Image 1 (cartoon, rainbow over the protein chains, first blue to last red):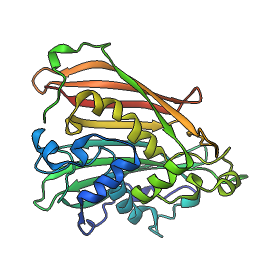
Image 2 (cartoon, each protein chain N blue to C red; image 1 turned 120 degrees about the vertical axis):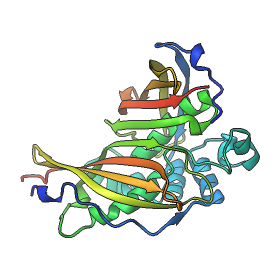
Image 3 (cartoon, each protein chain N blue to C red; image 1 turned 180 degrees about the horizontal axis):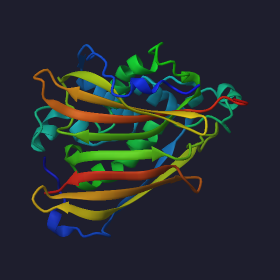
Image 4 (cartoon, rainbow over the protein chains, first blue to last red; image 1 turned 180 degrees about the vertical axis):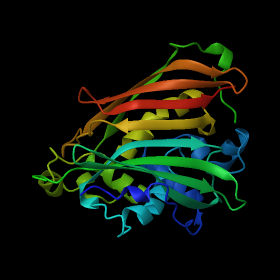
Length: 150
Length: 144
């Protein structure tokens, strides 16, 4: 069933702050096998001009995607998540995410399209720090594949 | 930001050192834990096949994380990445064996964008088992 176009432009309330921990960044860097010392060694990060260890570029997705849950699970929107695949992902950074950040995400539905029975949903997540400064914007395109025989 | 590559030293066509990233079932379990994405298509073969996949597949975000390492290893400071985007075109299929799968990534400078901001666009190519797994894979990087 095609998603309701009237949801385009809808913005959801900002999430409660997510506090970025050094050890969570380390865990993520180890999981992707990335030994860049900027992720684990505060001195190495400082030598690059950062105030603490920074997170790998895609780390923030865990935070923005959790926030996008507000959209995905919105019963009024009615997305069939069991049929959803991740189509595109993009980030634009004002600065890297770093340990100690307390980040909130504001999710907005940018577009809803229907193509050959597939529902395509574009969600923008604006990530701000505690001071209200922009850190990164994440764009996530989700494709809900048409049900068989639909 | 302290990029170790100078804007003056690159031209459109400059190639970045390419790299290959192995991915096994164990890698995917570890990534699931670190990222919080526990979708069973990334660790449960039976489930993956039931939903029409050939086998367990890697998280798209895992592939995205690996591909950008070619850029961050080149530039030194991961904080120099100003933009990064991909399209997930084909899944990385990860068999349950000793070798798993391999993600092969190459990249080159596609354009010099802004002489003052010293930004360049880098286009990435990522393949696994001979298939292109990312499309429209681009990063904007601030050089020294």
